[in-house]
Length: 320
Image 1 (cartoon, rainbow, N blue to C red):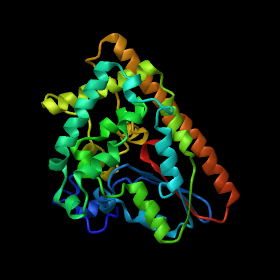
Image 2: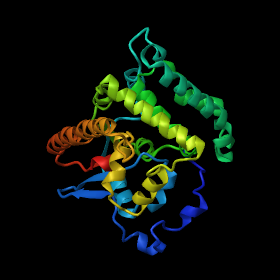
Image 3: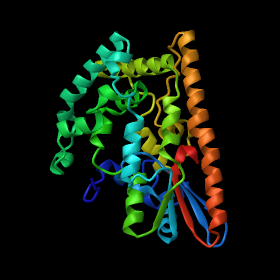
Image 4: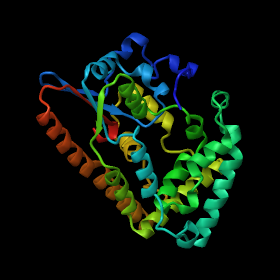
């Protein structure tokens, strides 16, 4: 669904950095120039509704986007093949269901949590979403409809995103998708530096005990949030504020980029803390360091192949 006519909440009419509107232009931006003739650009995006950040993106970044000949993304989110490949990569082998692979207790808690989300979803939705014809049942099915067939790691990520804040933002394109739609509208040539499998397979590469640990931790966190006994360590709101202030806080952005929660916390017993650290370093290696290297090589090849073109590379800020 398009983002036209979406109002930015009043709270965002002021700079979140305690600066006046004029000073906003002096803040860091997530734009890097590759000095050549014509210049090319790296632009760091985040995975949030574009309406929450667009007014804070400095003019130089918007001009760079408009003036570039070719726009490249991590994945081509406007290509139906990309979406169907992402979907099938998340599924368990043919004939298997979650009930067959999960410990009974975790399966039962997961089912109960999803029933709670489905019950709450109508009250989480905004009048704006309802005005656009988004219905709670439709939205729940779009996000979680096929959950029994998904691999546990993808169910963990799904549960992580089924929160009130995330539901309220559905229906507006995230920043990278909005840029892809704009590039298409402006008839720019577009491309992607990654294949779906390269983003998907590392997640499927966690071993079973690590995945069960991650899913259990995610459920514990959501259950505590439901009971009102937990504040999340950092939220989408923190991410947006850091981004709008041009703050390159890698701790926050690295988790937005990999779309993976951080399981390391001081309350874990020693053996579980080791598992949490193993998962964190695995994702850091696979979804940040190795990806950076692979993407960097492809960017270099493109720049060498088309020396007379101006490229605009829009990648997650945590990978920049």
